[in-house]
Length: 275
Image (cartoon, rainbow, N blue to C red; front, side):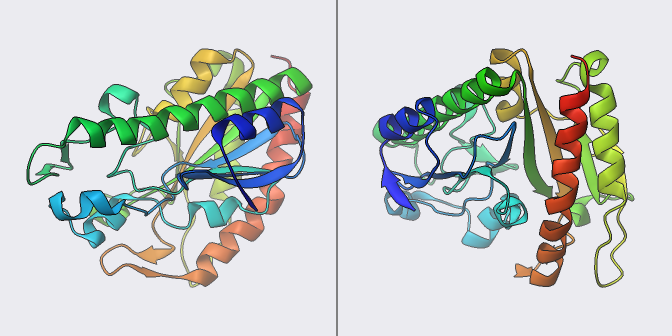
């Protein structure tokens, strides 16, 4: 893995060069082993929180971890193209547009002891901007090479906070063209529901049950690329104890191993469909 500037990363994408890099400011990673027709993303995987914000933050490290999506990069790490955030969404949220990416309050609690200085806000938004410059170059390259791109947008959610039964997997589709892509979305949901998890964990899957797919990552790609489909895929945090912060590596590994098979199958179906 190399440390590269945004400009160098984009140049390598344009030249269709395989590489693995961390951004110059360590805000995201991108691995491209092959310019395949699909991308795996984990925009909320990051937990880093820059030191200049520590003293001003009212949320504890656990409170930040609780709202992040730990291990989602690990679940998709074996695929040829993987882009993932390194920074916590409490610094800036890659799944929100720039105007709301830097929080003042988070999940009903004030985030900062004193108002965030403009210089800190600009610093965070610069990272957000550079990430989406790379996303734009990447999806553009995949579309130009294959005529279409399928993006697996991996997230997790805290199922214990819900007061009703919720699915193990949720697929959010309200911001994709279901007339064009409904068959792919339904097929992906069915595959997720058939995943066999260890320790007696059930695997159910629903569409637009807990989340509807309102993230900026999906909306940005959908708005800018006519032949790309983003599958906003949420797994309930059955792979960890969301109340204690303990991870269950055997569950994460099981998900990763099964996605190794299921994601390429879904890509093959997607490429065979008429758009």
